[in-house]
Length: 118
Image (cartoon, rainbow, N blue to C red; front, side, top):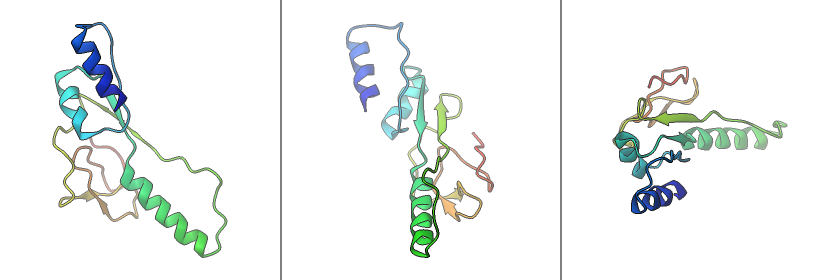
């Protein structure tokens, strides 16, 4: 959300020599990627985070000792690989994990192995 405020300020002050990047890949920033006012954003892949959290909870309940840190991939979203329509929960593509089933990923389609097709 801070990037949105930054972009608004830059526009109001007619400052054009600053490049802005965002975090969270909000639907609101997709038009700004398209028009070039925003250079990039990061998609944290919330569905993958949720899936992994549930899987770890199940494993912990089963008595498994889990690693103290788990890093999950994020996606760099740029004008070249962004899809400008919001995620549709009614439609899904193969998931972010090979065993994840399906996750909505209309903006950044993934193959069955979790590789970005963008």
